[in-house]
Length: 192
Image 1: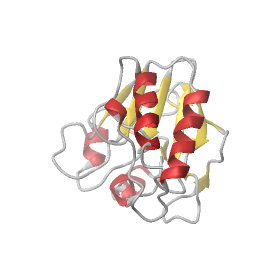
Image 2: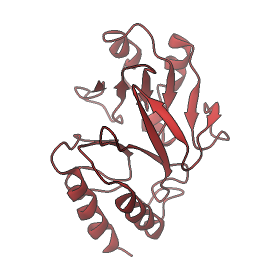
Image 3: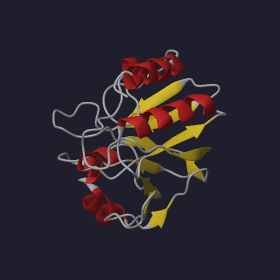
């Protein structure tokens, strides 16, 4: 089961996905809300935190989560504060009951990862792509529009069966999410 713990929040936070199962994890932890209490309303404990990237709105609650649950944090770059273990491009990571392929997808931020599992048809897109063809900002440090376009194109080539796309902000996409990726690619290419 996948739940967005930040869905009802009225603050500038990323989405926070609680992925329950054999390995219960939080995908990103958000900022400026009590994610620990939100998590504890659904589960007693989690096994890990997995990060799509380390922009503050995705990691602001990291210290509170690691202290409350005593878990390690997994992400692309262990030189980033709070990241204990590296996830490399192409590595398999268990989220809930499924194995997800980690895809290094820079352009929004250099340490950006997406996570894709073909068997359940689920993608955690972070801030690479949003619903309705939106895509991540490239005007921040480490952002690069041309690199972002390459990452979206790579993602489009790799995802086959896709039933759900969970984005770093805004709603998840559960109706033809591959179409939203195609629209995002077209829109992002306009600025290159």
